[in-house]
Image (cartoon, rainbow, N blue to C red; front, side):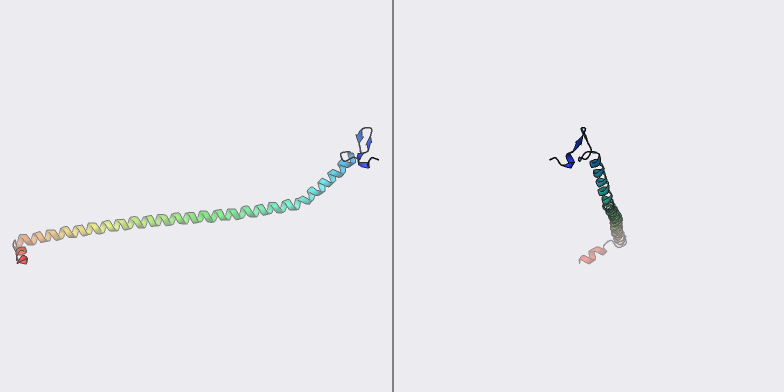
Length: 121
């Protein structure tokens, strides 16, 4: 014969899987499984929260590294400019000394016009 699950009264299912009692049982079961899932979902949430914290820390670290790298780059740039400026200053200084030497040589020649001829002999 038919199973108790499939009984019908006046076309209304009472005990079938989708009948009144069946729905009550199903509801209770789904509520129970939902309740069982809560701790698991909470654990997943905690895990995600932890993951987010870790990523956030990692991001802060990377930003700090980037800031340091930028500062180092600026320092290196400044050193480079400073070195260039020093080199220019040395060049100008050398040029000035050279010019001064030429002037002194000319002054000596004016005082003793033939002094440079004596060296050749």
